[in-house]
Amino acid sequence: MKKREPNLENRREFIAGSLVVGAGLAASLAGCERKDQGPAPTGSGAEPSTKHAGMSPHIEPGQLDHYYGFWSGGHSGEIRILGVPSMRELKRIPVFNRDSATGWAQTDYSKKMLKGRTSGDTHHVHLSYTDGTYDGRYIFVNDKAQGRLARVDIESMETDAIVDIPHSQGTHGIFPQRHKTGLVLCNAEFRSPMPNDGRDLDDPKKYAALHTAIDGETMEVKWQVMVEGNMDLCATDYKGLYSFATSYNFEGATSAEGMMANERDALYVFNLENIAKAVAEGKTTTIGDSKVPVLDARGDDGPYVMRIPIPKNPHGVNVDPTGKYAIASGKLSATCSVIEIDKLKDAFEGKIKPRDCVVAEPEVGLGPLHTAFDGKGNAYTSIFLDSVVTKWNIEKAIQAHNAKGEKPDPIIQKIDVHYQIGHINASMSETKEADGKWLVALCKFSKDRFLNVGPLHPENDQLIDISGEKMVIVHDGPTYPEPHDAVVVKKDLIHPEKMQNRKLPRFKMYEEWAKEDGVDLFKDNKIVRNGKDVRVYMTSLAPNFGLKEVRVKKGDTVQFVVTNQDKVEDLCHGLCVSQHDVNFLVNPQDTQSETFVADKAGVYWYYCPWFCHALHLEMRGRLIVEA
Ligand code: K7E
Ligand code: CUA
Ligand code: CA
Image (cartoon, rainbow, N blue to C red; front, side, top):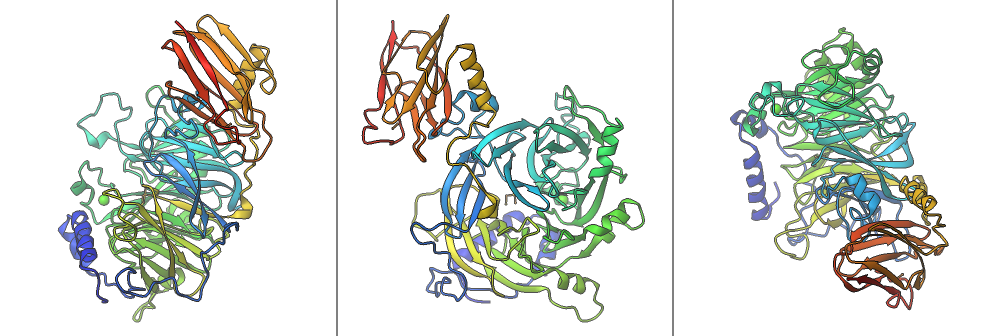
């Protein structure tokens, strides 16, 4: 073993120690040895690892990246777009959070979607698919905090739908179907009473969790399947037949110790065809006041759900680009379980046992979490406790599993990452077009890799060149906490529009108001009073607002509806009303609205917060509130 910084070693032991509570577990983990240390950590006198013969992540000023990276924002509640390989942050898309720059969670339509909530916890971003690759239409993202699923329209790069999933606490793993934009499957991580109305409080045996199917086109909740164990990560196959969910608390415990009691938990396999048939035949029930059909599949290895025993507190599950294998990571076992998807049919028909679908279980390191692919038969698993990425060969792992006597070694390389890696993903890894170019390793701790910025450190998203036989780290990418997952998408599959295209559902709302009030949004500047409700239609065209003065009475509810007439790319305006907590963005050719109460008499300047013109500072007017 190469010499390490003592700090780092302590930290690893600390983190490992805090996780490893069960004695049996410690014993099972001790058996795993690291094979190849990879490059030494930089910053400790070692050669910087960027000197290598492979691809450069450097993108010259003015040059464009080759990939879009879509990052979840974790408990920031947003989605971020990064350019890969430069790792430059290009945009943040507010989803569940309040965003002062754009007015998200303040504008009328976003408020309506959010129902007054302004926080969320996004973990998993996935794009809509057609024929096993991205179709460039939608981004889906979960909210673990409040059990929701949201969708972003890629043309506008704006959240266009948010769905509350009934009786789903801790909506965590999500995955869209890959044969077409069909269902988006969503896992509830937390078991809870059904319904959660005060019953069964102290009777965890009766708690359950739901696997929910949402139509990716209409964003309607289609059905739910109730199971007994919790569900963590989710994946789908490439044919539309199955979805998968790892369960780390198959024990049904309510404490961490209890959740680690058994050596094996399970991978749930949902048979989507059989479920759809049962739903169509009405073999369902409902829970509480939700109208969504629920199929109760607790405890039975029936035609709907199969449980494959796998070790131990499994976390990630990923399907390889050939669609042949689902790979579940052990987390508290040093192994990954490789499930051959073609065998599932026989297992569902009772011809083989569920466990017979496991065709390999290679030892990859301590605390395996997630797996990415290069399209050349290799898997890359993030190893949390060891802070490494393990590159291993899937076919060799299967040969080793079956071999009598001498076993081939599937492990190709382990490379240090900095530090405590969570998710991992490779360019196009979640599609049949995985291209084996770049791997992003999303590390939870950055420790000493960046300038000290206080107790809250950035995360460290490292970029790894996987185009050669050996992985090489080429870039450290600090991010604001806490992205969990990312997908890396070829740039020619993503075509956002540069001007607001007015197809989003919120435009229907403005058109209806305009019709009611006999107003042309793009031409008219008009104040419409209805009792104490005052609607202000106003245009913006650099460097002027259509109204220099808006006169209202104290106590009026004022709604500004602003339409940006500018047709110039990148020419945004906005509206900020001084002292009234009103601040929103209006893209070129866009309309936005926000409502507030004018509760103080006086003169309040409204102004454009986006630097749009030499006379940008002069782009303002007076809100005159009469006593
Ligand atoms: Cu591993 Cu929420 Cu995907 Cu985080 S989960 S790392
Ligand atoms: Cu418009 Cu600044
Ligand atoms: Ca467990």
